[in-house]
Length: 382
Image (cartoon, rainbow, N blue to C red; front, side):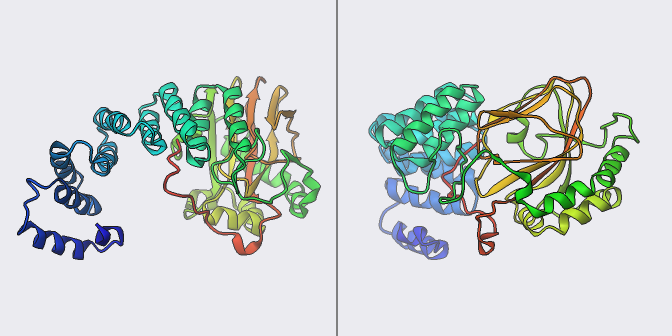
């Protein structure tokens, strides 16, 4: 087992071969489990499951084998079987927060959000400092549009006084960097590059109008939000949300270079924007909402970044609410907010709304820390 833990798969395999001469894995649940782990490490999931099932047939209480079986079954899309094993694991270890958390993850994957929240709540009743359970519970409660329950979940987390975690019930990002100034709205003039961006508004707007068919509301070249990120697509409670990506951690498409050269030049000249996109912590894009579109309340992925919107096409009846405060866009002007705060959007106007959406590093983030954010593998968020 220690060889596997250290990642020494070859040594573990050799050791297993030697051990088999003394005891067959057909009669030893632990040997069957270890063989399953080796197959699992090699991504041979079906063969690993055969071994885990042998181990569990011999020793049904071998939780490590049942846990791994749940992971393998989930990866194979066999969710009902994964759920059955997770429920059995909970019965064997009813006082384990980890078992309830694993059950919650399976239920969340199956889109059984109410049951998933119950599992996370049980995990937290056993271990009130289980950060990952708070994060996942917030996600499923948002899916249920249970906003006040999200805030109560955060209240419990705050009352637990965990280090490096949430301090405001309205600010609930999965990744939390402590000691950064925290407020939902920022004065745009705080950032010197905002004036530069606003001065280039006419050129940026011209490129957007070209993308829309020279003034016609033709957004066929714009992608549906959610195709690149399933989570983003789930934010649309009604209506249509489209995007035209500009900067991200992937190479810039030739179409973007050709059609938006002036916008790209401006964005790439601002380090806190360009580096943010290159690390994958955030991105820059044109965001388009059709009339009648609403985006449900949600919190962004990290407080290490802020978000700016430059209004491009803004009809009346469009609002963004962050931290409980509602504001409107204005064409040619930027607004800046912290999207790790609970925020939502409503478009009740009669024409499309387009903004240039920009993620950039929080001003309190040392440049030495402008790099991809490490998130623990236990963060099984949706």
